[in-house]
Length: 403
Image 1 (tube, one colour):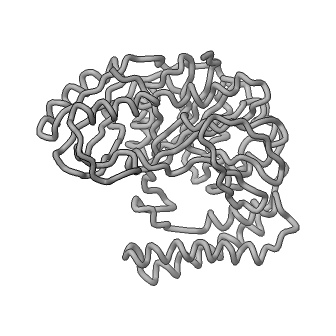
Image 2: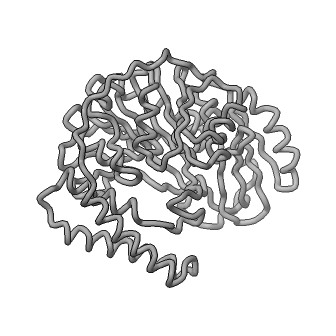
């Protein structure tokens, strides 16, 4: 597999610990030639500087992910530009697989699959988005190239996507009118006529949903203002003749159902529910009133590529019982400087497994010897320890080096 140079852009705001973990994981990519551009507020910039890595850094402290991505794009020197969120970590093979389709000159965008907090269940797979901003699931299991139109195109997820740099610059980059939400969908529709989009299921990241100004750590929304404003802007851009009243009703019903779920679970009270619905109404009005500037081609002059020391590393699996965890973690920290390390630490139970990248630079899988990892099949399975480790190692080998 041949890989051209790539630029990876990470946008962060007030989440220095998550950002640092994301960058540490990027140092384990098996892609041989890429740079990392971090766009974040001064405190987070200081945190990643402490890693002592060659990074391109942009100080930016505004709650506008589109503007932040454009700021990073100005420094991107590679022909392929990839994006990952600060609260996500990439499998070591992520960038190689996500960027490989760009060897085909017709490909202008690519997206992969996203696993959720437990490290196994999928949070996002494949879908298309239409001019109303509505998602349509598509059943994709293998790498696929798809074309699109201004009315419907493959939706790339912001925490796992890549674009041909020149094509993205030609359409004016990201629209800063989308401070949050539908920002990638807008790019997808505007870019559809320029070429194909690759869906790469094996290019995977793990996304944890850290707390932010817009949502709590338990995913309870703190405001619906930007979601509503972005939806109104999206319709004005892509479906100006649509029924806006019906669109607002559809959005209100969807968000009210989401809020009701959190209310039933006791995560919010009646006052918070009313405040959220009020923020939706205000955001919708703001989105209808906001000017829609013409997006023009960008022609930045970025500094030369600043490669991050990375490339293929040998893998190492450290497996043991729960009472051996302290020793396993100590070994993992030591070996993580030179290996892709996965610790599998199991208890004699049927507890479901969790898989998470640790800030110290290794992967940790925990759970019961008899419990599920992939959430399929029986919840309890009698199996010997050695066979279970071999099974998990075979699955992991699809995404990272193992011993």
